[in-house]
Image 1 (cartoon, rainbow, N blue to C red):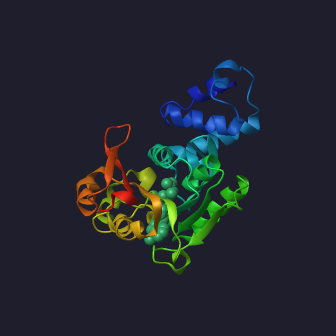
Image 2: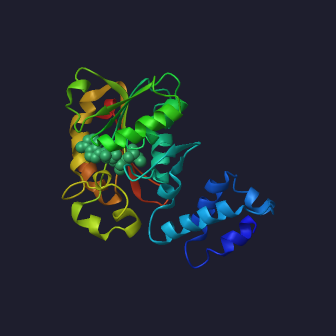
Image 3: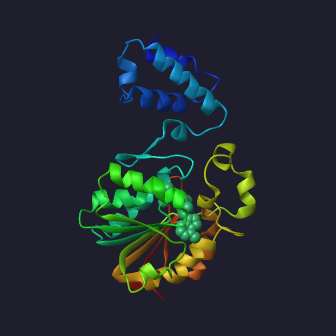
Length: 271
Ligand SMILES: C[S@@+](CC[C@H](N)C(=O)[O-])C[C@H]1O[C@@H](n2cnc3c(N)ncnc32)[C@H](O)[C@@H]1O
């Protein structure tokens, strides 16, 4: 059976996009090859594909099934210990670097898989990144990604859960970037099953109103900025007004879907 026939068999079980994602990962092909090749898929691979489809059909995210997720121009290992990187976060990185093109001292707060830290280090050869996370299991995944991307010399993982951690004392950063947990605790139960039952709650739970970590970053982050430094945060659109009020000098920008999603606060705009 060739790839397109195999994809057809998944109709009604999982989405077309998920089926393609699984098959491309399994075959190690670029997407356009799906339409060009009529080479039959070996039975062992077909059996593996069917097993993967069953897992996704029961609600598991395809990225956890393949163990890989794309982020900008590279790939990461992911599993249930880390959040699956989202396209909105790719945009956070691009927007932050458009404002501060060559940061040298970078803090990625809540690094998870390390996607932001790795993206910044790959794009900015002079950058040294501190990749901080409260979750030891998440940092284990981050370390594997750093090894894979040969960035252990420039990105340092650190287990910490606050900005007043002793390792940050007297340090100043050109870029403090974060995609913190921002879902209000009561809303976790209403998230899609794929997210709620598989992704780590520590990566999602933003406390009673969702702004627990965001508020801490806004309160303490500016003290850690070097002259010319930038705080760049991913936020939930529902928090935009409250956060604007707390940080009057901040600029909130919309994502591609037109929702308030990013907050930027430059050291010189502090009021
Ligand atoms: C929304 S995930 C973001 C992960 C990754 N940066 C990304 O964008 O895909 C938030 C991350 O913050 C971490 N985290 C949650 N509470 C934290 C805290 N108090 N201090 C540091 N990290 C925390 C979680 O373990 C998780 O990895």
